Length: 342
Image (cartoon, rainbow, N blue to C red; front, side, top):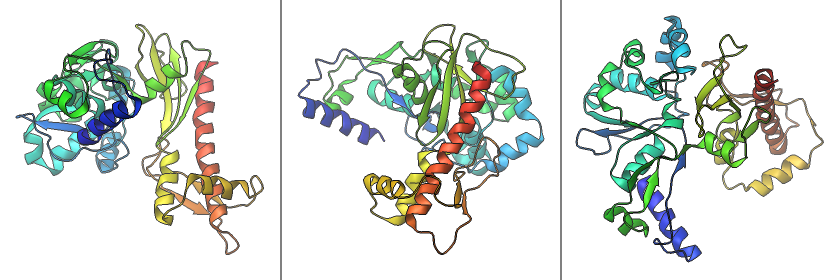
């Protein structure tokens, strides 16, 4: 990941003709949740794990039976998902105990890349606030959380919480040599990618919602405070402005389904896909698709599938059904968020 990031920065500077010395500062927006580990000698500890990973399914189901999510939510304002760092840490503890014993630092994607750029460790607040390691009321880690989750051994491996706009370090000479950036350039905490989309969309108050069609289907809004006893267990996180929170309804039910589908069909361009879908009447068949390839916030056990398939259906029908399934999943999240913001 670091090599790819460094290569992209270097190529971008070369392509634009901008020199590293012209860059006044930088920050990284990256995927939230998942797990990146360093060992006690600050070396990458095994392969990173993405937020769409489901290996911790049995662990989360066990926690649900033990009512652990109900204990966590009032403090963290998070649901408990297989791709959360805490779920993956517990999986590593139970399945790779030697690796678990070597953990020196717990990070997420942009924390790891920022460390590669600066040599300074930190967990950025908009991301770590949605990890189930962070107490939303205090703005700090809470050892009760790791105790309830059975991973209290990693408390000492949690890096300091850093603000999104806080200068966390400077580009090192080594990173400068690889990327073309100037040594000493300040690097800020950065943003969880969902938060960055809300910021770029200009969301500032509770009057507007923002939808993201990425690997996850996400509808988000900005709140000025926390609420209790809501209709749904909305996910809250720290926003870029003091006193504001980003609120989500989300599931991994968006374009990740299309990415998987096209990988099975070989070389299929997005133009070809769109043309195939447009060639059919809207809602042109009774074939439908459940977009739960990576699960759903409606239930961990939910799976993906095409239903109503007949011999008359072709690839275009499958693609149309996939599009419809993804859109209806987005609509579900949008309708729930409308309940919260109206």
